[in-house]
Amino acid sequence: MSAVLDVVTPDVPISGRRPSRIGWARWVRNFVARKPLGAIGAVLVLLLLLVAAAAPALSPYPYDVGDAAVRLQGPSLAHPFGTDANGRDMLSRIIWGAQVSVTVGFGAVAISTLLAVTVGIVSGYFGGWIDLVVQRLVDIWISFPALVLLISLVAVAGPGLWSVTFILGILLAPGTSRVVRSAVISIRHLPYIESASCIGAGHTRVILKYVLPNVLAPIIVLATVQLGTAILAESTLSFLGYGVPPPHPAWGGMLSGTGRAFMLQSPWLSIWPGLAISLAVFGFNMLGDALRDELDPRLRGSR
Amino acid sequence: MHVYLARRLLLVIPTLIGVSIIVFMLVRLLPGDAVTMLLQEYNYGKDADELRAKLGLDRPMYIQYFDWVGGVVRGDLGTSLRSKGPVADELVNRMPVTAELGVIAMLVGLAIALPVGIIAAIRQDTWSDYLGRSVAIGLLAIPGFWLGTLVVTLPSVWWGWTPPLRYTRLLDDPLKNLGHVVIPAIILGLALSGTLMRLTRAQMLEVLRQDFVRTASAKGLNERAVVVRHALKNAFIPVLTLLGLQVSILVGGTVVLESVFVLPGMGRYLLEAVQYRDYPVIQALNLIFATVIVLANLLVDLLYGWLDPRVRYQ
Image (cartoon, helix red, strand yellow):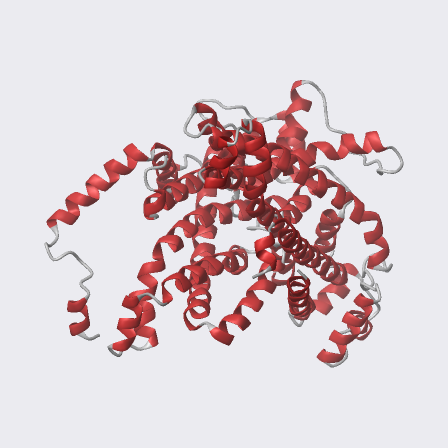
């Protein structure tokens, strides 16, 4: 990398590190004050990540081995969320389910964001016939009802944690790629981009150093919201029986049709997994909403 | 207008061709041993050669494709491996169920989203605004299959009431049929209304600040006329676009709710086909759903040109 260009456009304020660290703490405080709902979202998201990461330590019982003596019990001290038809502890299953949701959610969004950013930037930056062709492909891609194609593809590829993650990632990408493309087009002909080209920066350098950082805000916002969408899609798929297969305790799978007869005996079974999904998705949506308002100066100040 | 119409119609053709190619590839992506599996597990034919011929896998790829597309254009959507009958015949029975569910859901979604969105915009930053927006975000987070499951189980636990689960066709007994469809349709409509309401509110806020709205108020129109005739008409155009894009979500939702409420529509047909690896049916359903989405968005764009004269002259 050429050091000369870095001096021309410093990435960090020249004043050094200390002010930026104080700024970080203050930014968090301001964020909580300005966006109370966004802060609630952030707390829910952090909680989900924490529970997923610490599942082995947090769960009081194994998720897959039950005790036949305590089948279909209501909430008690030993089992705060009750037990399912196999006598498995629901609290433990919900805790381990967080891990499934987080794995599929982050995996799928990582794939979708990578794909969408590549497609969106190439299409918006180069324009012309490349844009025309790529956008027609995106048209086709976006025309499929995601859930229907998801079910069909899983039927072809076989269910499993990774096939679900991968296919979901591909299906989430076209919408984001459209947003990235329009963000790129809006800055493509600004003077600083053209100056970078003029002083001899190649396409790769211009894209990575000047285009990408300036379209990062909408990408971050969309990725946050899509984490919620991915978790919802995974749970829907697991509910229908084509998601993450049984040894993994997926939230959607806990609500699936076969368990419905038991839900009549023990209504708690139908409450916890749905509540967990809703809170996770709600958290990502609220956080994404607040981030959008924060990162877009025009929306700043609205609650 | 004619140029706009023609250009928009022309753009649909490459999209539909692309869609058909992807749907066609879907079955060709099958792993090599799939035919053996279909024979052993589901007994779909006497031997591998016969089954390959049935699936059309025994001829060169491009001939298979043109054969299939030719059939589709003539209304032949293939033959089900499981029932051995034409897929098109089955769809004639199932399509009205899904269409009814989808249309009612869309109406429910609009009936909730428009008033709530308008009120939230007119009374910006009051408690009714906050309430409306919180409910909208909440609705986006609640999975339809969970609401559906709760509606099927909880009332039966508490009051011994279950929603009717034996389907009655619309033409046989319209009232009974409506009683069957209306609950899943409301659940689906609630899911749609969240996004619609948020956009309605955002658009109304933008339009209400514009000069022509002030002019309308200044010349003495009452608030109702200003909001409905002047503001809403302009705010509605992006909402209409979103409604078109939501057809995709609607289709996914019908699959889920038809499964929960045991409705014999296309969504359940898909689930049954996937369960029995009935590939011709999976292929046909994907093609139909994607075509419906392409056409819905075409319709939206055409309406757009009709509602907003500026679009026509671009």
